[in-house]
Length: 435
Image (cartoon, rainbow, N blue to C red; front, side, top):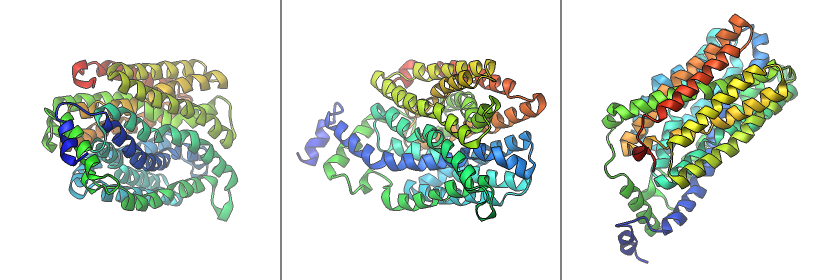
């Protein structure tokens, strides 16, 4: 079939052959992007495992740790929008490469931390360098995947979150046990060195493997390019397109506020789950790591199934709100059984199965109201506002723990935030976002 025929076939509807092209794009892009996010998120949360040793080594308080964990997101807030402006100027391939290499270097440099100030500085720099990564990739996915496949694509990419917990948790515990004292370095330093350096290698791979857009993809023939472009053009009619639209659209700011509350639960889980599990009576770092992986393993399955269900039913609001409420219930139950490892872990698993799928579900809403440069900017704004909660959540729990001796009230605050986020989801009309 000639190129003209293919293009004519898409004039009135999306043809069935688009599914085959989408599968080809999935196979080409998603595995590498998933691996990149796995390493990126691991570099973000490994501080939660290193904390089990570094606080004693460096004489840090819980509040100092919480501030250091949270200050990462100040870098996000500062650099999120400028990062996406750079993305639009230099293209996704070069920008993703630069980000991966930069935060791989900075994460590895955490081994040189000796004071609270140096800890804060490196965490701030790590946030600045990573700020553009998630918005860049999520925007990149909108250039390749139709809306009917975007929930699945986003879920598979963002599966790096539970994967980093499922694999990274026991890995970090093992590194802390096995490498303690090697070459005169503490186990927590080896965590940062061995888990940070792979990002540098992946950055270089991205430079040679990724394409900026459909036109530059040599692995698609001319017919496939025309078909895919026609499908995507068909879906963007009537949406906001300019950078200014992404900054000024009231619905973008409503979504951003929603994301703020949803991510309170996510970052509470990410940074404090190892400590919460240790409070139930588990002492050995490896055992803490193994138990921490359990909620993430179940969350990985939940993320994929929710993404499939959301795409199949073309329903976004109830999937997102339901996940948030599930997370709130799990966190609440874990508080009442804080000293029973089995019940608390089961409750935290339920919480993770609700909280973590919220992220890809949320990012199916943004392309429903914006496309092109507007979508890139809208994603950056939403992620930037959500990152504020990344600062508040870990600092809040650390402060509460220093003040009361436990994390109960901090965790309950996160549960309330999830309920508020679930309610705000319905401020978006179903006819707008359910597609």
